Amino acid sequence: MAASVRDNKDRSRFELDVGGEVAFANYLLTPSAIIITHTETPRALRGRGIASELIKGALEIIRRDGRKVIAGCGFVVDYLDRHPEHADLMP
Image 1 (cartoon, helix red, strand yellow):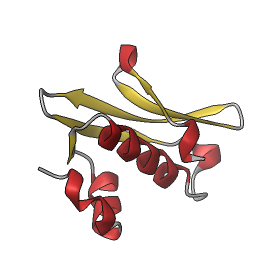
Image 2: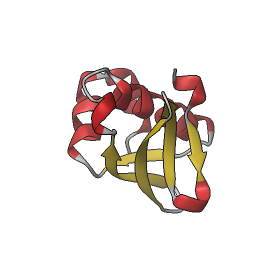
Image 3: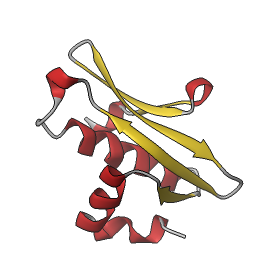
């Protein structure tokens, strides 16, 4: 599922389409990092790991672009704590 995460630069958010719904993670862009400020999963999709797939895909995009990530929302903080393989993305 992570392969279908996209960076919607016009709306400053990463998006993942699932079953006609869109999960998203808003961000702020700095010269060297992306601050993920809010993660939203539609109610109908909650509890299925969609937000984790969204953040996993977002981190892959951030890594590919040579940036760092700053966790600005609790979900991303928790995700990074559970996935130390992404520690290199933190400033």
